[in-house]
Image (cartoon, rainbow, N blue to C red; front, side, top):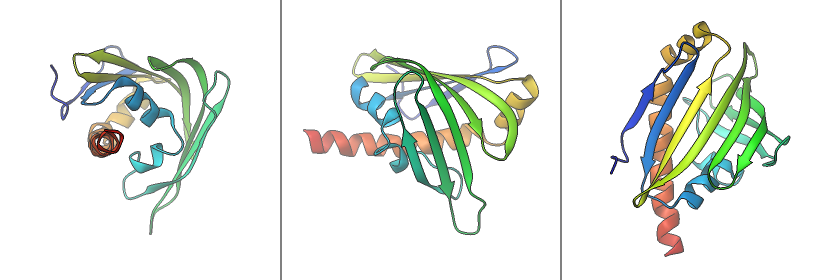
Length: 163
């Protein structure tokens, strides 16, 4: 059994980052938290900013758009298109950022049941090693860890309400 508080980040190739974390929650609930416009803003933040726009059209060919705002901070936005969806196992999507011409990232998120946990593996394929390294140096691990900590608390609350 994996420790739910540990995020593991690896770089299996020059253009990839793989993040893995276990959550003490059913796979369907974790999948919903990653794909629901109602739930995403409750845990997915950017440093010093809260998600104020969350549009999700969860279907192959559908898109998403997120905007984060915060006092004294420049707005940050991302968008993309869903390329593959297998509920509740996998989501493949593109990701690009407003005001950052870094190209398109291909993100595959997998949700695996292991014992009483859901293990989430996010594989990001960047356009270049330089872009991947810039994202890593900008605090990808600490940002992902903080978001996943918020998600852990949210999942615990949701399970308590559903029980």
